Amino acid sequence: MSNTIKILLVDDHAVVRAGFRMLLSISGNVEVVAEAERGEQAIQRYDDSQPDLVVMDLSMPGIGGLEAIRRIVARDADARILVYSIYHEQVYVRRALEAGAQGYITKNMAPNLLMTAIESIMHGKSYAEPGLLTSAEAPCGNVEHQAIVDGFSPREFDIFRLLAQGLTVAKISDHLCLGNKTIANYATQIKKKLHVQTTTELAHIAVNLNILNN
Image 1 (cartoon, one colour):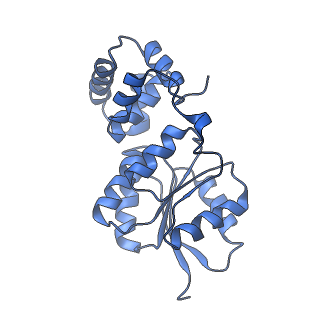
Image 2: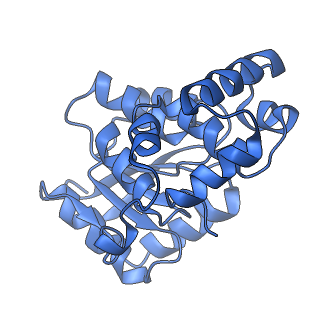
């Protein structure tokens, strides 16, 4: 058991966590020692279980995956984190790596890539699923908008993305477990930074920057 890789699995869907454990069961040297369904819980479970590697979803209630990555790395600069997300756009990969993750794969990847990614990170290398970091995914929108979005905090980015998807303040509040007034304040701040008035304009910016699919 001394060579077993201890994994902390973070995803808000129990079915996804079960599927992930099934994929890992193929390997004899990986063990899920702890699970979390929210970013806040992940930080506590990380301290409690001291895993070798964290597998982290990005879209979760509460502080979300990006902020959880940032906080875990702030506590432990040697933390190894692999993002396991539905998002394939380059902006998500870039923000995850900038937050402190060492790897990024999507949930529709080939099963064998999972262990490839884990082993690469455990050997001190970074890993991105083939095709994620290509020039084809480079931002094609307004350069000024890209610079502004790049400067968003993880919380601002999450709310910007959800607003652009058409979610109401109330729905975003429920999803992130924050008050309506807090979300409304963030929405006002985001629109002000991007110099727009409506969520439709936010959606156009998100599409142009490859944050949302056309």
